Amino acid sequence: MKVMISAFVAALVIASLSPIVLNQFGWSSAEQGSSESVRLD
Image (cartoon, rainbow, N blue to C red; front, side):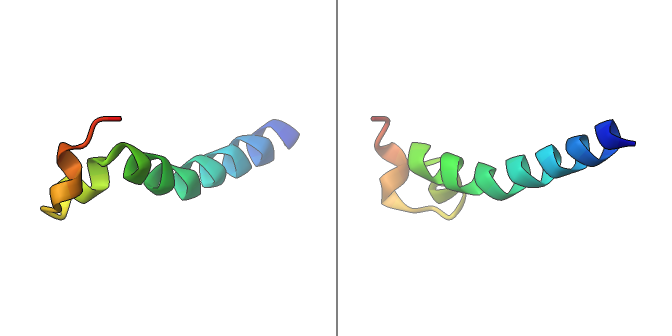
């Protein structure tokens, strides 16, 4: 039971953090057609 709950919490954390991480790499801004997507640093 604890494994299922911890896996669910981990999935929520990953789902909530992934847009922030992808935005830092410029991947979500690339989907929006922003000029910042060219930056790869």
